[in-house]
Image 1 (tube, protein in one colour):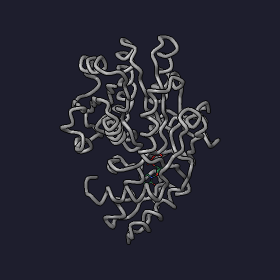
Image 2 (cartoon, protein in one colour):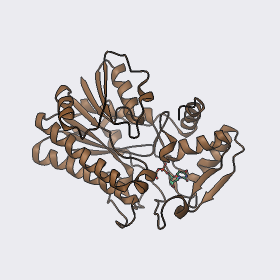
Image 3 (tube, rainbow, N blue to C red):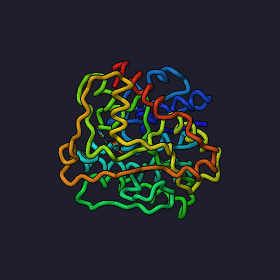
Image 4 (spheres, rainbow, N blue to C red):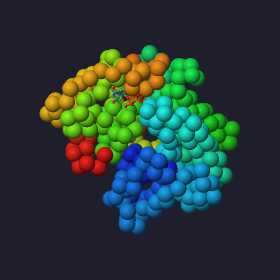
Length: 322
Ligand code: UDP
């Protein structure tokens, strides 16, 4: 297969590229390096099965050409991270909505399958965990910028499903739940790499809000294991799947675990949301995936659990590349 990965030099995209190349496929990666990094493809550069272009997917002639060349598109290019969303809402909305629009438009011309990366953020303030894929999406007010991310991704999902329904473009949507692992940069504010960096440098470990909010972290290799199986699953077409790990931990407990596992002397400090982000910032108290659907499709069971995830993120952070 020839696989196009938008965001192919990002955290998840670069792991996906490695997995496909290891399986003997040919990979084309496009990334504008807005949050990705050329270091992420260190191991792939020079491999004759790997081709990369540093450019934006908004360069439509180039995008069209890459799509023509490939059999399947993984659309992972997006503005991600709550901090980025709060600080740069215009870029977030435009990148996420327009980027997906052009990918679907060009993929549709040649009816190339598209896998759209979405997020558990779309469930918003829904509290009925675990979240099934057909659960309601509960968004906050439009004056609260955080929800722009969820809404932009929800529009991507609507548009992809519309292309399937109306134009028979084969699409699959995957909703990631707090994916972690090496290459996830701390500078966009994601909690695990941030806590690890803080703990290793002796800086205060910053727990935002009460710390009682919980998340279910998923190791990147578990996500990749599912993504690489999708091209062989006709039943995945026109469907939405959660990909996650249902084990939950509170953010306070995560801070304590990171501190203990790094042997750090860092204090754990609680920072009110309004100081960390905007006034009136809303967080979600829990976020747990229902994995029944993806399990039925590909026999998915997450293999890597939290301690091991933290260990590997610590190892990566110690390399000083973050
Ligand atoms: N968080 C935190 N300290 C940080 C970064 C994040 O306490 O330095 C919290 C954040 O408020 C949220 C959780 O950790 O409750 C997960 O945040 P992240 O940005 O990693 O992902 P989210 O689940 O919000 O998309």
